[in-house]
Image 1 (cartoon, helix red, strand yellow):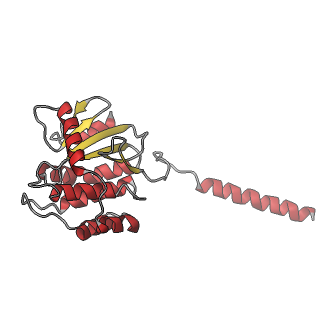
Image 2 (tube, helix red, strand yellow):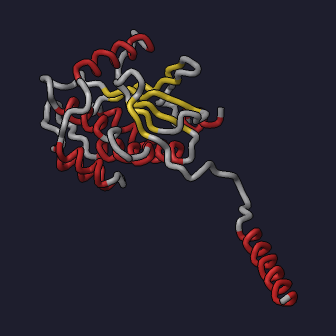
Image 3 (cartoon, one colour):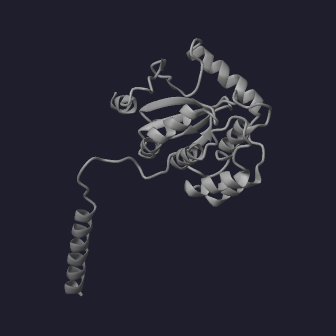
Length: 225
């Protein structure tokens, strides 16, 4: 019996030693594998993608029909998703609808869909990929009808969003008072820059600074500070 216990103890020791070796990871540490959260901002008019304790936070004022907003997503959307996913960046998106010809138009419809995603179990990185998909399929003709609910749901699925969120977008329910959202976000944007009040505007609230997004290295520089 003593031999058996000794052999068992030796076996356990060997297993622990081997397991301990396999858990050692070389290289740069990454944050906890928990997914970055997605939620509506406290004021009700922004969508927050990322961990609250992310060391870098920005706010992006964006209009779904704005061509320069689409360019921003083409150039930096994948980097946004990466930095959100590893916990280095939190983005608050603040949609505007000033390019709509009438209430309930293209931009209002897309803006509402963005808020629908925050009413489920999607995460911040998935949301960022959805934003990029929306702008990649932007209709550049002003006053167009914009994507349908089913088309946006398909984009959400491509972005990896859960089926419950995809279905919610397809159903097309109301998630935000778009008129109030547009008014409040424009007023906020105006306080940031009352001379060049347009989109896209990327704002660093910690340093109270409008970022120069036409500097090709602006995001790299921001993430290094």
